[in-house]
Length: 128
Image (cartoon, rainbow, N blue to C red; front, side, top):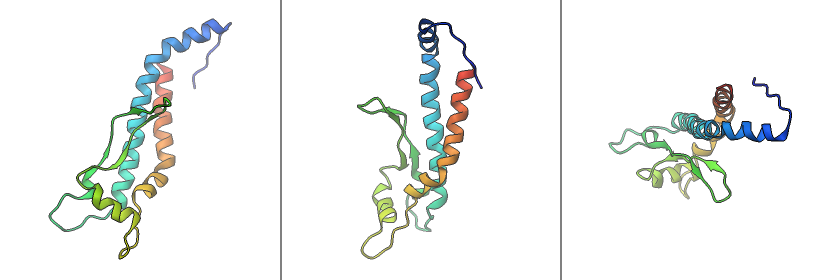
């Protein structure tokens, strides 16, 4: 773990100003890595059909990092446009089919591993 010692506020501000590029780089890398973990869980939870069509399992993607209007950073994880219309039937069910939620369940099951992966990336960035 990193340890910082400062005499005054000016040094703290200077330290974090120097760290800023590393923090930005670590944010993008950590978000992408966390998203890949969630995508892995989602792929494991969705069944693969024997039909000759694009499979949901092969079309679960992680976006590039985005910044929302409040400054929060995020990535989107899930089926791409090619198969999203079919994935919603599995996730939420229909009047003739029960739900088989793999998107939300994948994110929930991946939570601990996501935190570990992201934490490791941030610690590596702080040690540089």
